[in-house]
Amino acid sequence: MKLDINQIKECIPHRYPMLMIDRVEDLVLGESAVGIKNVTVNEPFFQGHFPSRPIMPGVLITEAMGQTAGVVVAKTMNLEKNGGLVYFMSMDGVKFRKLVEPGDVLRLHVKKERSRGNVWRFRGEAYVEDALTAEAVFTAMIVL
Image 1 (cartoon, helix red, strand yellow):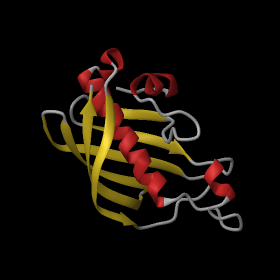
Image 2 (cartoon, one colour; image 1 turned 180 degrees about the horizontal axis):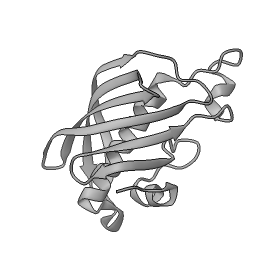
Image 3 (tube, helix red, strand yellow; image 1 turned 90 degrees about the horizontal axis):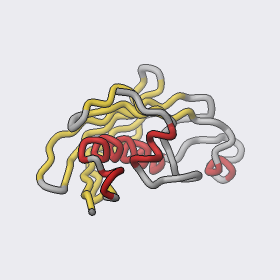
């Protein structure tokens, strides 16, 4: 299943400048998805990070992974209909491997490791082309 930006905005509450994904591909309900972030020099964070060498902050890469996972949860649990939200609870094993710069297309692979009640645990990996740029394991809670 694929989602465009309008369908993503039905699933998660994030809006500019904090909406970090442009589309979702390969969504498998209850399991996984690939989020796409087209990184442009017009991103507001590049004004200060860093003006002479724009680099996407790692924390925003992990946020993009979390938003992709949030879409998986929202579509799986039909949260867009009942108003539930997905919140980060923890992040483990976060590693940044390669810089993400303007012009890059960030592919955010998230896969559910387990879910118990309203708590879901995901493994996320971010890629530019075939290069791993970041990885993390994170837990999210659904609040209705």
